[in-house]
Image (cartoon, rainbow, N blue to C red; front, side, top):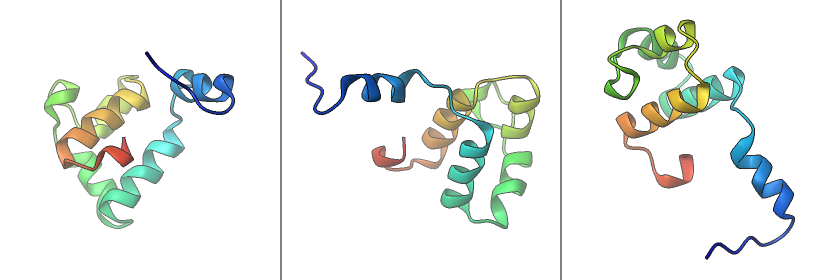
Length: 82
């Protein structure tokens, strides 16, 4: 059983709205730093993205939320960052 406190439509929208690329980059920058995030995104191949980098996945049209989940798992970030 799931209990939602507050406005249920707001919570539902949180899970249904696709992540925008700007949000993906904001999270990457927060996790890796402003200088390292672009380099890491262009060079590190992630298994969760079919051995593609973040940059390759973006060019291929992979949803940003899918990319972030792969990054989150790779970096072993806390659940609060998911």
